[in-house]
Length: 420
Ligand code: HAM
Image (tube, rainbow, N blue to C red; front, top):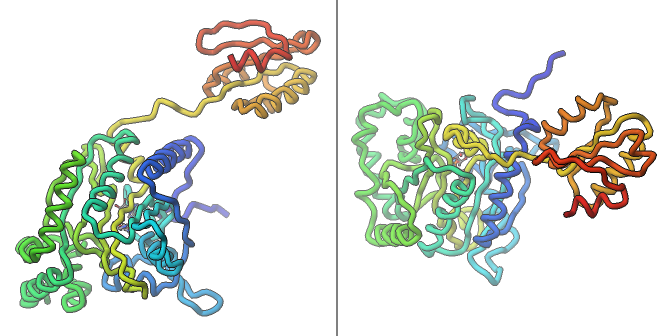
């Protein structure tokens, strides 16, 4: 039997997992600086949660969910995104009652979408996301966007751009919706079945249909920009002002509609502009979702957030040919020659590790040369050599790998010497 990793998923192997850890460290330290606290929610939720929030006319809900019936005959779904669960938890745990509002949360974890596999698109991928729930101050929109940009910059990306739009409030959305229906109705027969079904239910979804992308009516479709009411425009202006203050450049794109139903007002994506990046250029997407908490039975709690996949962040770094130079290293590699030396070495390495020194030794009974090669490959800063003579003298040979200097040190003084 020949088992393979499921299509659209990947193993993160040890020569790459350290890069994931670096990104996770950056995420944690940036969230710390911006005062976002971590939340962990289950990998699966009731299917209905996603139907109601992400929206039952979206591609995610219609085509991409991993849905199953559990042994209690309940319909469950592996989470395709994080916002629905975080808002569910906000409502369920009455976080609207917390003294400090908005409640600022972040999460990192696997999401699942049954999508066609291609570069940068997986069926299991890891999203880092933040949600700030409880405030409709446009400054928090700018804060959330700035946080995302900061993570990319700290990771070393420079070829990125922010694309921004406003979807407006309910009133603006409704008048735009009427205009879309009037625009598409005369020719709806030329569109795919999904779009035909979407016409009355949610015509905005037609605009991000992957099948009918090239239809001429897409180009001439009424733009949201022309339907924003005064207060929506004023809100959008404020968000842009705050972005200017933060020194963040953006490109306005009135056609940016996002693929999930819960958005209103601010919508944004961050794209890679690197030539080496594949067809899918979106690294991060987010926006405002006033009304979502009420949709799932909570009190009014306006929110904004984003999510980015770590896979795409790493691909973007590769596309920019940026690699971190600080590969994982060791403090000490212990070369032992012979049985007595290995016994002594085993005792010694325990002490080194107890003192927090990242240490490794040979367990394959290899010759000196092979052990030295390992020390090199593992980027050891020091090599300690113990042979028969050293065991008898209670000493070691200590080699500084940076300058090649080697000296004899008593085992009793070794820790002091290394700490120097
Ligand atoms: P989304 O645009 O569906 O939004 O996904 C956000 C990000 O997740 C994408 O920009 C991309 O980086 C990553 N992503 C999505 N699908 C895949 C895939 N198949 N393979 C790899 N990466 C993928 C959301 O999920 C919203 N919950 C974001 C949000 C949070 N809005 C407000 N708060």
